[in-house]
Length: 249
Image (cartoon, rainbow, N blue to C red; front, side, top):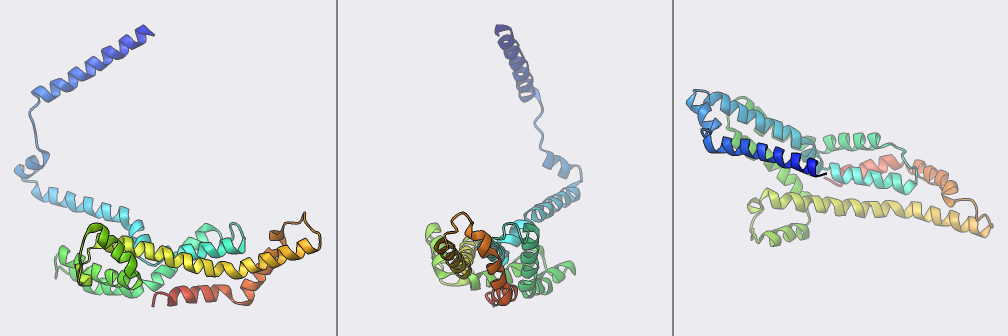
């Protein structure tokens, strides 16, 4: 044990000596200044742009989920599956895929406006990147303001200590979390309404089985076909999708 501790101490001293020597005697260098002084400023700017682009691509899934209608849709679809008690039917891939394409359908006007006012002018070098970014955020902010409750918006404004007299004065870092919690509340309200008819079926089936003395038979096994039948008879998918899409108008 002592030999092992001795070896660890020796190695620690060697590593410390190497690092101390580098710090003490190495010539301090600035890679940014070296690039610029070496006539490679253009390459440095290109690297920064590439880094920004990769960062945006990395955050793209989060932007798609949090700044669009995706959050509300996928939560409501999950509530439907849980209320029916169908376990993994439809599977997660189907629910996420349906939510994704419904999001594209709902956000199509916003995307068209961004493409016409921001992306195409920037590609044609008619506007700068900052102007394109501001133009791209305008329709997104308008969409979020329509779906955000005043109470949730006031919550984050009070936390930040910001007094905004107009919507343009509200920064994005205040609007985005307010929009997200508003979407969560709306989704849970819709989920509660969805649960009610399926809960009634479960209660009726459970009461019927108890009155017949069939205590060993799980009520879920009997109620599941009736819940599926009810969902089919009322054309549930049509009603749910219609309500989801019209809820964003």
